[in-house]
Length: 357
Image (cartoon, rainbow, N blue to C red; front, side):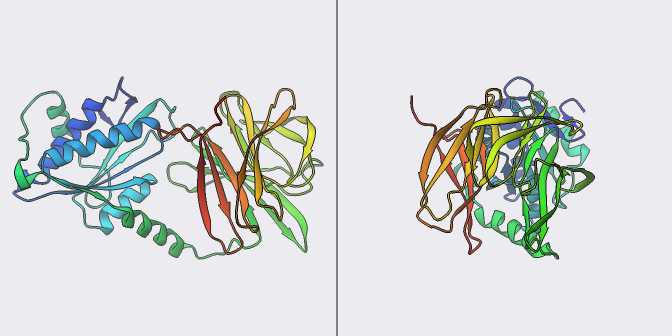
């Protein structure tokens, strides 16, 4: 295969994989499953949160509807969600836009057949021929032009299926996640009668979400109050964490071996730290202010230990807890993404743009 490898068409966005490639894939798929068979095709499309994913989504959907197919947009969803909903919704095929664990500047387009499996190679070969200019695909006109459908109900159905499949309880267990090198790093703590008995980092496969069997026992003199969060600095090869209460230092570990490196003293103590994220060399921490409607995102310098309030946010619910923070630039200008939940187990994600100046 020239373009499609073992797991889709991958490359650096607009270098190895361009917007023209995406448009042509949409054009051929929309025609092949539709007008080619004298009917209207139904194709489902999902994406990850990379900046280029929005661009590729627009190109793919444009190609699909231009060839007469109806494009059902799941928006942001994991790759297994596209396969699941392709089968569940009886779609002709599914398309996932994701660079998986590759660098953010890369991206990929994965196609699945109506059974939710990797697209048949004979179809992929036909797509490659069309990309290379071998053959023409007619444009749909009039009422034959396809429609775009905001298919949020499909994503909700996938989430409901995941919830229904859980046959165990996580009551009393706190879990946070961070990702690097194709792994999800999940800190897991457990306690009995109010005493913490174990602190582990468990590694899950980013692609399949399955537990890899790899874990690290993080119990030490520094972690006597659980391990509520971790943050990954993939560029420098570090993992950061701390206790929940009375945080006077941030703990630094080697990401590959999980060897303890040092305790970084903070210039002032913090309390109730629930999550963290590394961005441009700074460590951003979600701060859960008990019994207050004012909560803060803290910026800590892991080199100097300096601490500052990045911004304060208003939370009208006193029971609200900031479970985690992710720092990642989005197309809409938002940078900080905070996961909240309250005692009624209502979870939501709030998005914030950086303060000007």
